[in-house]
Length: 232
Length: 78
Image (spheres, rainbow over the protein chains, first blue to last red):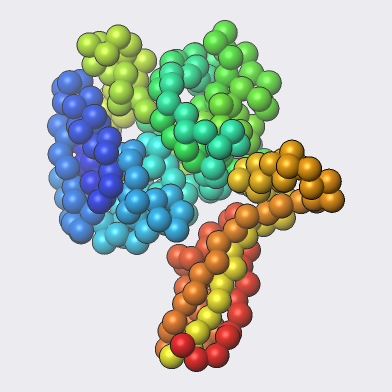
């Protein structure tokens, strides 16, 4: 698997993603926001950060970068795309994923490790058993996921809710475990097809055991395995 | 060039954390008559464009129709 990690002006997690991917034995290279050729990449990651200073709204300007037209085409062809944190915000602005990410209801920037429960979803990026609890850091000011009631029903019914914030034991009230006010405690969603995945937590930061935890590894290894199987 | 003033606010029903905080703060300051406070954005736009084009600019970039409403006022020449 070779991942293209898009670098927008103001991205700041691209090195973490490239390090995580290479540490796990995958290929990974940077893709500049002005590039328009994604040839040779098996998957695209939009990393965290503050693209274009988060001006207007988080992700609103990045969505119109030249590279995003290609990312949209790549996704529409079924290519795997993962947006982490600011990358998730960009995917919603680009309408590759529904909903939006508002300011945290606490008005505080949140930077800490949180427990997440893996849900039974169509997401191609994650093959963990539903109900598994992973601990992954979040690092954001605008992670308060919101969508209208109809969209929420759609997300639930189609297996598009991939991750929920939960209590340390995996239990969840579906309303109140999220540190940021996110609707239905949603931390990550995918599109109907499952190839486009957006999440607020940062799995790339918990891949190399040197940081003390490896809960993020399955977020990258499942796709690599899937691609290897497809290639036969 | 025409001058437009654009007001962007969260849609009704969308929680506005800064607005809710301002609302609480005003009450804490003793302003008992304070109702709801909603905080939005104000944009001044100079453009050789009609209102249809400005509306398109709002839908595409200046506002996010998923969560925000906007109001455009044409206020003469820049």
